[in-house]
Amino acid sequence: MHNINYQYFDTPSFRLHQFNGYIEQVFLAEYPDKILLLDGCCKSDVPIIERVVHEKLKREMSDIRLSVVTHPHPDHAGGAPVLRKKYHIPIVSYYLNDCWYVGFKGSLQHAFDIYMGWYVVIKTSLHYKSMWHKKLIHADFLLDDGEFLPGFEDWQLIHTPGHTNVDCLLYNSREKMLYVVDMLIKLNRGFVLPFPITRPELMEKSLAKVAKLEVTSILMAHGGYYNKNVSPELFTSMIPHVDPKLTVLLKIFKWFTMFSPMLKNKGKKFAECRGNMERSMKSSH
Image (cartoon, rainbow, N blue to C red; front, top):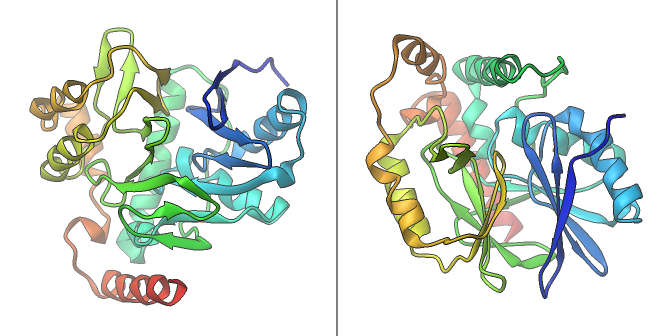
C-alpha cells in the first residue's frame, strides 16, 4: 500500500488524526478509551483506516466505537457499513438519511451520485476503485438536528441541508471545532461551495445557521484541517454564491442529481420512509 499522507492535531480533549482517503480527507478523533470516525468515507478507504489505526495510533479497530454518516454520498457513506459488518462498529446518522435514496427515483439518484464520484476520480487522475455501495445505510442510531452523538456527547449533529436535504455537520463546542463536511471546499484559489447545491434556499439558511456557532477551527472533507482566521464571515461570505450561473455541462450534471423524492417532499415511498424513520427515532429515544 502507498505511503499515507497523514498528520495529527492535539486538543485538550482528544487527538485528531487526518489522512487521505480515496477522494476525501478522513478524520479520527482519538480519546484515551475510544475512537470516533467522523464520517463514513468510501468503502475502499477501509484498508487505509485499518492501517492508520494499527500503525499510527497503535490501537485496535475495536477501539472505534462509532462512525458517522453525514450524508448519503459514496465518499461519506460507503465505508461505514463495511466497518460495521467487519468490526461491529455502529453507525449514527440524521434520521432521514436513508430517505434520500428511497424508491425508484432514489435509486436513480444513488447511481448518479456514484457516477459523480467517479467524475472526481477522472478529473483528479486517480486510479479506479469501486465506490458502489448499498443505497440504504440502516443506521444503528438516528438523530435529529442538535442532538449529541451517543458515547461522544461532546460532538453535536447539526442539520445543514443544501448540498442534499439530509446533510449534517459535526460540532464540538468544547474545542470550538466544526467538521463542515462538504459545506466548504478549500482550493488553491480559496474556499468554494460544493457541487451540486440541490436546494439553494436551504443552503443560504444553513450557512447563516453555522455562522452563529463559536468556531476557531474547521475540518473539511475536501481541504482538511484549517484554523486561520475562522470567523462567521467565512460562512456568510458564501451566501451570495449559492446559486451561481452554470455552464451547459454543469447544468446537465445538476439535472442528473435532482431525482431524489426528498427534493420535492412528496411521493408514496418517501412518505412511508419518513413515517418509518420518525417512528424509529421516537422509539429509540
